[in-house]
Length: 392
Image (tube, rainbow, N blue to C red; front, side, top):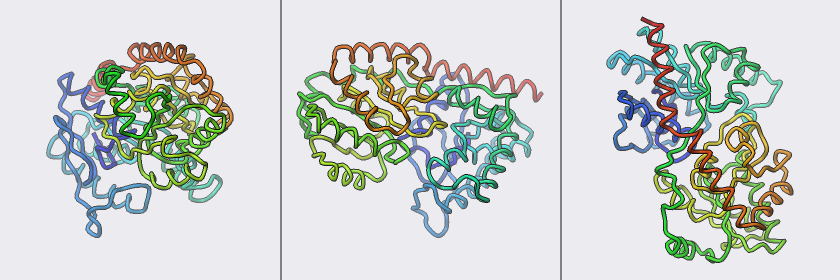
């Protein structure tokens, strides 16, 4: 596996990479992950890292020009590993991983899988890195089109992404929907006792009698964090006895300042910073309601599955991706980015705690039925077997 990121960090695509690897290992596969220099090692996972950039070894890669250097160093390490290790399949995550993997796969004559987690140029537009109808967008789009042609197979994190590939890039052959899943043993609503929950809330400065809204993920505008804070301020203005636990990174200080400018106190919203993945269930268990106000219509939203496994009702904007996860059991806000509808969706759950709890139970059942990593491991094995048989 090629992971063009500082694996492991406690969010999003890192969880998918980790859990796919663990699911394959559980089925008897040998998996080696080649990734950037920085990141956290994980017990039982074979991780090989590229060299750091000579000019700044401690740089934590984000969206910047440094990423080009990191990808070049990663490509060199991948080429070394495929020649030395001779894998049966190369599995490239994200577009950079697919590009590097396709070159390496041709070098040693093995099939390449592209783990597609959303349109590269779509995300660049969402994040404000490029503007449509510009020369920069044109060339990035051409590169993305070329990358989608290169691998032998593409795995998508949502069914909606298969439609993006078909209608946006004309790729329909060798495309398999492999939705994000959740570790149901780790994410369990009974991971802490009721009395422990009360003690933890007090330690965080939250009155235990309040209902708690939880958010866990990256702190970024495209994740809908500004809309979340505005909705919390609106609920406070309507005298709802509610607090929110906002868990994630980066930019915690900036969002805390925004919250206080909206009139929210340290009891109304608590920012925890980065939460380790293996500790996330204990923090989510403090919530009564969860929220996933992501504004992108192309990216997956794996946090929703963690919420579902924790038997939490979920408020989200109404998109094809969120409906794929939640079906008819989601509490949806519309249109995308609208604060009043998001506020009303939260209020509807706060007004009826009993119905809210019952909805959470049904969501955990749905997660177990459709979104388990055991099922994902089986699907991955089938794709690999199909590819390796065709290459013999």
